[in-house]
Image: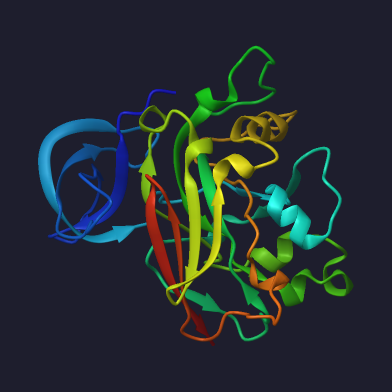
Amino acid sequence: MNSSFRRLIRFKDENGDIQYGDAVSDVALVGQKVIVYLGQVPWDLKPTQLERVVSEVLCPLPYTPIIYGIGLNYKTHITEAGFPTPEYPTVFTKPPDALNGPFSDVNVPEECLNIDYEGELCAIIGEDCRDIHKDDDPLNYVLGYTCGNDVSSRYWQMSQRSGQQHGYAKSFDGFAPLGPVLVSPSAIPDVSKLTLVTRVNGEERQRASIGDMLFSVGDIIRHLSRGTTLRAGTVIMTGTPSGVAFSSDPLVWLKNGDEVEVEISELGTLRNRHIFK
């Protein structure tokens, strides 16, 4: 689809009003003066000539109908996890209330143990689609790309508590920070050339080319649309590379106050503190 923006941010302006605007750069978003759009959702915006100053950066989406996660989608992660290579994408879901902002705290409930990070490229659906035809390009339905962190409680992901299902361990409120910028596909013709880096308290834990994905963004969208309507605003977290805490030796679970950064070239950096209750 044709996005009306190139590098969209959702923000509070100097008056405390929530706006959408095109970021000039990914560096020092707060304080930028940006051209704003009229509209309530990123997939239905109209440009204006108005300018506003960014005072706080919010999640690029005000809401989502659903968040799809893809497991075991980086070849290096499949190797470190010791699982066989899947024939089809491994799919789980996170509910709408898992959505969180790019600089907001992740509040971890007391019973969520063994908290892990998963830096991910996220694709946002901008137009309802279903049963994408083999001659239709699935990327035509992508509104934009952004950074994400698939926060996970490995305690609840263990088979004796999960029945070998991923979703519950990743579905707690605020466990899907996104942002800070939603970048139009027109600005990134080939996402496979991007690089993802995850840091914990400044220490690099993950680094990978998006091109290491087993299933491309297009492959994933086509698979998810099989007999299923993907609504505008749907978030697809496309998987994480090697370097997660679960596979570290010794194990290095996140602790209270730890800050996780997920940076993807050309998409900026999200940064979230994890606060344990």
